[in-house]
Image (tube, rainbow, N blue to C red; front, side, top):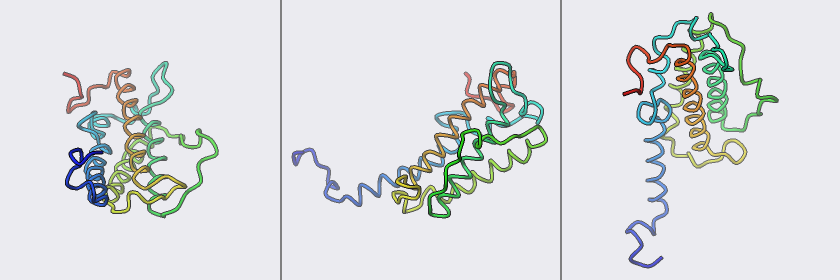
Length: 176
């Protein structure tokens, strides 16, 4: 690197690190909820009745309800890990992260999703995002996993709704 390649702050690693952490803290809440790069989680769940949410379309492995219960399982695990400040055991089998749910569980599972989402907000701007908490994985990495895992499965939720003919939601989807 030559002197002309340097910025005035290159000699201040804390400043660069602080800017990166601030950028991550601003980005994470957007990733948790969507609404910019993908349809927001609230819109993706809106207008669904329990029967539709519990229906598994032909040719697909999961219902909206099943996907949301799975997202909740992992989001709870990640938040518990962060809030306890120590590694938690991984489940023995992937199937353990897919709770058995039925139409009667829709309200509870949906409310739990929003409760977990509210819990994560307090962690997005933590000053210790670079601290390891789960083996070598940092708090920031766990929060990014939270966001990416949620977004991945919400893409599936949109697909399930499309197949069921329950898309777009009442407020509109990401179709123009």
